[in-house]
Image (cartoon, rainbow, N blue to C red; front, side, top):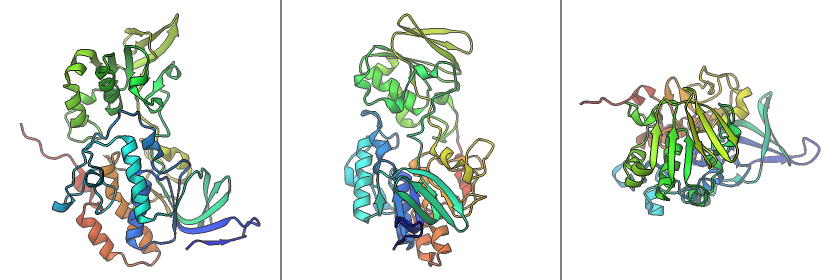
Length: 383
């Protein structure tokens, strides 16, 4: 287990083979994979609590991917984060809310007896010699390997145009039913924007959605780019069709507030007005920015990774979660980035001298060990 001593003179030094930062879907999932691979001396830390980002979702927001108890036929539940786990079987919910899934993560932590330290805010991560130094208010934690699984939800994208600070980001909405007003301007037309419009329309409100692209018109099967079928289905809802108007390829230039009225101006010079504060649904920056100094940066701003999702410049620094990128492949959903948990766990376990042959075979059989990225392309489409 962790060795403890007084190397810093204060008696609060700990050493682990692996420290995982983040106790969300990525952190809990890769911890289970580590455990399956035989790694024992590890710790998960989170600045809040298990699944806290999911608990912060608007009350009405649900998973766009359906849970289904398909493990018995050799197909892992889409919302599962581990081998042999099915949220559908345990929760009996097809599209769980954030609160539902946070409770699910807590139950997994309890079942696997994962070593988790909550309310531990990591202030800095640096590597000195062979070890990482993770500083927090109570002292330092030392590790041979670090897995950054900080997620995205706590890092909303708030900028991009003049007056964006006047808007309300979706991550700060507790419930759409509690929002005052009856006419909403929504900036961003991907999943969170359509989700907001759907719930507002169901409450009898009008909404106008603006997107600089056209995610509802993308001719691709990749859900990282195009809208999910769940969103398309909801867009065909009668209240959505009656109460929501969508504007594609309409970039927002600015938002201003004068005399009790918000004015949204597009790059084309069109003005749209509402008495209600506009909703910002333009996504998230990603928690990987916190550890940017430990990774090389790709042209798109995301961390450059080895074939094991390890930093190309700092050995022992790994990335898990929605910020993982390889070439043009985007792993922004649970069912996509979970396929890399086994890769990271195997790399670390083998570096510790553990035999991983059976582990790799088991994870590969469940689609949780994706080492051939050539199969990640779009399927063939026929008219």
